Length: 361
Image 1 (tube, rainbow, N blue to C red):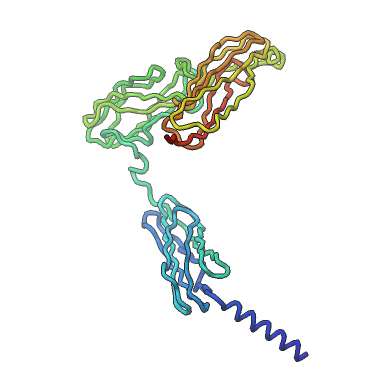
Image 2: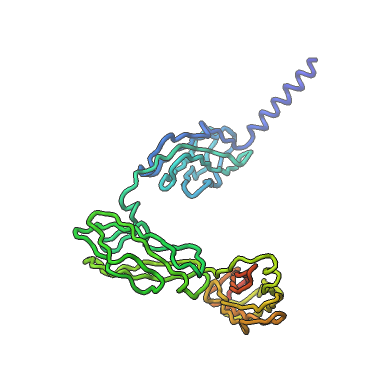
């Protein structure tokens, strides 16, 4: 029995000696609770203190925060045995109202070499100011947002409404007299915006006037008597889709049907500045005439050219796609949308890609 006790004691002693061999880090605390902090009170910091309890110098290699809201700092010099060091975490509560639970990862020359430090709290939201509610400014008129986004609309919709909310910060009433530059919008103008008052102006979109399927972007001009800035510019956008009337199963079976040989093409490695082309062949596999309304790409670097837009059943055609790699670098992926009268797939995407490398002479 004495031999067993001696053996166990020797093993524990060896383990203790082994555990103390090299640098070792011991924190006073590894967690911190900031409690309630105000969003507009600025950044808060906490410092975690530690001691090198080992027998060799300790080195912090790096400290990595869990998010961009945290900035770390730490002892850059080696910490000798028995000496203290620090890790600090600075948290920015701006635009982060509510409860938070964050961590920072410490990498050191210890065993184990990774230590997690955590902190938590609750950010009390700041009181919204006038500038928060009306951040966009044009002369004496302030807007909640200086754009009109009508979202997804069908091209048979004559009246889709979106409000523009404005506030007059001037010393005189402002009259919005008329709008121009867009034929598809109407509003109850003229309208007067009283001093220090908010007014909601409804704008009516007539989608039947639009001819460009997909994303439509425009700039509306508001003509006013605002002395500071008479003409106001408001961006307008909508995503226009082709109207497809309801169909029975029998009607769908007899309808037109758009099909491609393939809808994906990879150019592979392309030298920057090089122009490459490919074609996508498509067919009318249905029983009625196929009509290609429009072919639209995601950027100006891709040019599409449908050779034929009206196909009888069984006929085929091609869409030529040209990719301009000038100014591009790395992996590039572009989408082309084909709008047709296929009731099952009125909007069909084809895709091209390339790996653009820098040209070397």
